Length: 334
Ligand code: UT7
Image 1 (cartoon, protein in one colour):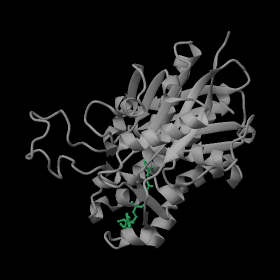
Image 2 (cartoon, protein in one colour):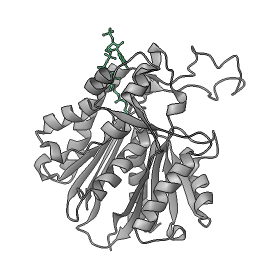
Image 3 (cartoon, helix red, strand yellow):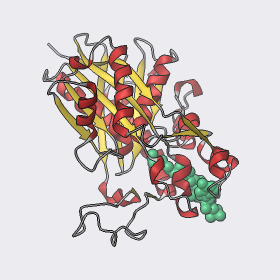
Image 4 (tube, helix red, strand yellow):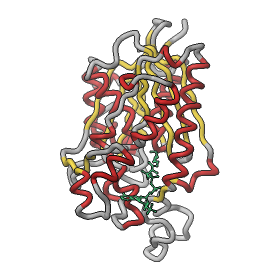
């Protein structure tokens, strides 16, 4: 019997605080016009310190997904948590969600591939489900990024783009061979590791937390070579979508919906133009949330599903590119 993996529940959570471009322009040398034109973003969410954590935002999204799947937390066999902004250096957020949900002693794994974390998570879950190892897996993407912005001119490109949020999916085994995850495709190119990164605090120093090594030069702020990331993103998004289509003998016009990682509306538009697909086949919610890194795809998928844009039988492509560099895709027959 060949097993397939299907998504049976989706959920998301965003912090209450809405930060508009105009509000940002009061503290950073930028403007609503610049941000809208270069990124498509109109507003983003910022977490509430003392209330929101990467782990508990993930828990809230997960609870929605579990309920949506008609399950209870203890039905989960394995937890995968993708984030670049964990609550602690260690342990990871997966075990924190396990604690918050009161889930029995199942395995919990954190994924550290940044913007592609959720798609990598789906790929890992798919392998476990296809081999029969687990039947019900929770995959979460959650990020708090607003507390690490350099609000000077040097850091403004990152500060205007990134936001906070969480999304989650429940993946389950299915015996209908015509449905579910058709394939997953994962890549990375470590030579660009430092083109989008946050270096401090890191374990390469004699003392991991040492006030003398926590300097601007060492990298206490995230760094992004925006133009370089942009150029690679456009090429890799096209490649990773094509790879998924070719692996399944399908064509771009067979797709019902592409949910790209919400990196920049201009990147999504360039990729859409390449495939000559109509606007309604590309889902974007970056306008409301900015780039939420590992949370962006599950957050977009959960909203698209709630808006009725993901229907049974549809061919859905999730595609992502980001820090690492890493890029990844999956094709799902819903
Ligand atoms: O999650 C995946 C990883 N991230 C991405 O995919 C992001 C990829 N990169 C981008 O989205 C774009 O490169 C940015 C949105 C970050 C920047 O847009 P850009 O069109 O590449 O702008 P730029 O860096 O080439 O800068 C153009 C100008 C510069 O001024 P001069 O030198 O032309 O006078 C910048 O100093 O815009 C200036 N600038 C800003 N101005 C106002 C840069 N950031 C800002 C800002 N507000 N926030």
